Amino acid sequence: MNLNLLEECRDAERIGISGHVRPDGDCVGACLGLWQYLSKSFPHAEVKVFLERPADIFREIKGFEEICSDFPQEAPFDVFFVLDAAADRLGDGVKYVETAAKSINIDHHISNQGSCMLNEIRPDVGSTCEIIYDLMEPERLDKDMAMAVYIGMIHDTGVFQYSNTTPATLEKAAKLISYGFDFPGLIQETFYQKTYVQAQIMGRTLMESIRFLEGNCIVSAIDRKSMEFYHAEPKDLDGIVNQLRNIEGIECAIFMYETGVLEYKVSLRSGEKVNVAEVAAYFGGGGHARAAGCTLSGTFHDCVNNLSLHIEKQLKRWEAEHDQRDNDDF
Ligand code: 5GP
Ligand code: MN
Image 1 (cartoon, helix red, strand yellow):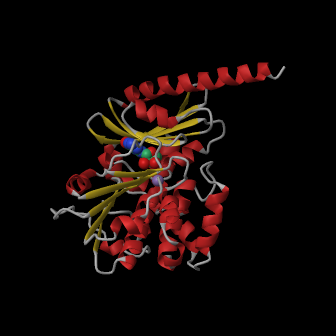
Image 2 (tube, rainbow, N blue to C red):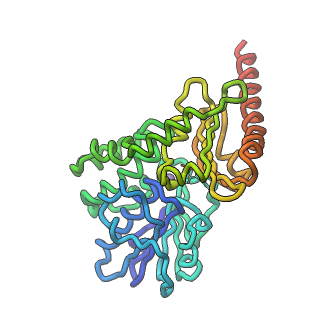
Image 3 (spheres, rainbow, N blue to C red):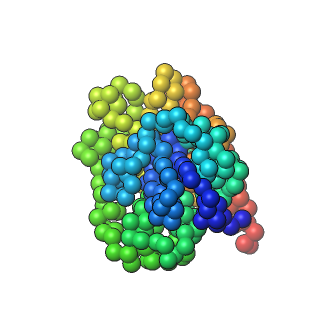
């Protein structure tokens, strides 16, 4: 399907946009990029964005101050967009989808089966922002929109490093930076830069990490007491799991933080041997082959044991397939 954004919104007086809980760069960029595009294309329509308060690093994106984070009661929307997730990951925003005259889901998660009336789900595309860019009429694009969708692209591709980066991604990125926003500053300030506290937490979790499955896997966790000690919020933990995955020999990295009594939010990252989307999906979560997440109940050790069983199975499957292929070569 090829969604026509302007056609779908043509007669709408009220348009709503939302993305997943704990919004990341792709989610914020996609919501604000689309917000800008629709606000500019339909100046007489009311266009609103509903998102949990994003990290301050995204404050430079036009529309950041317009984000509504208290999810008030609203009259039904004519069109409501669900971006970078299925509707069940919107948190309080899901109520707007249920009452909207038309709902539209735009996402790139392989675990998303399509949760709205219209669904544009492209698991082969590296970021929701890249899909949003594809759906925009190029002549309507401006510097602020270019910056918004560029942020999503850099965040979900790890600054064009992950295997979800395609030649097409880079061609689009090339067009985007031609609008002249400060892309080196944006990459530094939204992707690499950490606050002192964030760096301390990262250091501590790296120090306390444990390798298992013959050094192929690594896990680290942070409990609620430590979160309180550092006055840290979940968004202060971004990047830790990637750092664990960067360690030599690691095929699968797990980072967990305690969200309640015997409850952990789990982030998974992997190389080619483990499909973490499958692991997360088994536990009711989702994501991509190389980056996924879920919520687990139990003690730290229960969680690691449960995850470990699935990861080990995948490592063995990969090794068996590769032994087979090596034999086939002879
Ligand atoms: P992160 O580890 O950065 O929170 O998430 C990695 C990827 O997995 C992201 O694309 C994110 O949307 C997805 N993800 C993380 N947690 C969950 C979850 O609980 N459910 C689903 N469906 N996706 C998740
Ligand atoms: Mn995304």
